[in-house]
Length: 90
Image (cartoon, rainbow, N blue to C red; front, side, top):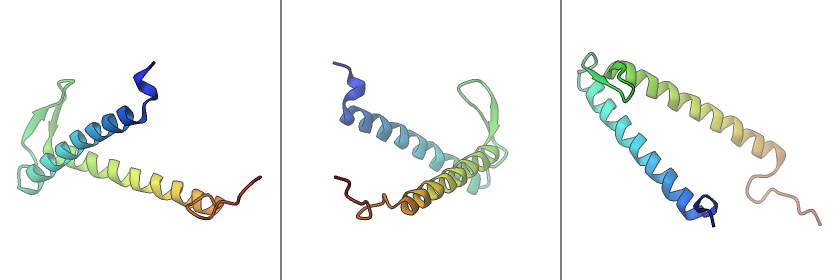
């Protein structure tokens, strides 16, 4: 039996990935808002980033995710499939 089919393993995986992204975002925000915008670091692919550019990239990613989530929620509400609005089809 494949572990990919178990919802608990998927939830744990997404949770760990989200925790890693959140910790990285908090570190970048701390460095950027602390005045260390131009201090550099290397990513896993050995690309030289500054904390300022990483902060801007994370902010753009968060804005894009919020817009996509808003469109998704709008479509769900419009189609009547949001909680409690779904028609029973027998």
